[in-house]
Image (cartoon, rainbow, N blue to C red):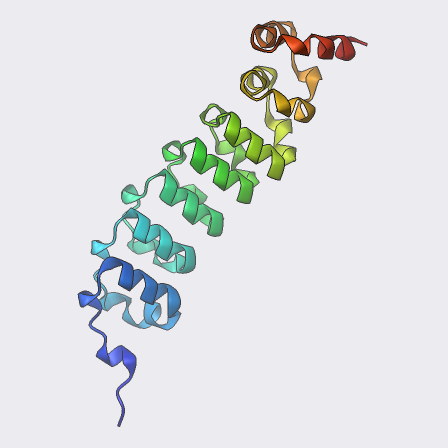
Length: 181
């Protein structure tokens, strides 16, 4: 009689990454052997990697261990966990990657965390997100990244916005004349 591989595995001797890779690759182990695994030894990034493929294990995860990068990774593949996410942990890079894949989270995003490079990449992949921006936000973006002017609805900028923008990008004076026409 041959032994099954699962009979030979001592789950508690596996280091965190090996356990994660085993559970990611072999879903049958999740249901049958999760009680034999020492999941308390997993840390944030290991949990993120595991939850991408095995979302049913969320109930075992200490969510406080997850940082912004971990949450970004999880939400890209498992957006249903948004109600558990501490969105304030995400930085501009995390938001950029998340919104490129899951633009529905834009309303949760502190748009000021995104820098000009983030916006350039984001608006290239998700141009519809430009509609979420207000005039003052466009001033911040265009001050740093003037090449995005073609993505901007210039009618959103008021007089104060234009004055602020002219301080850093005086070449936009001609756009004011075109908007006024």
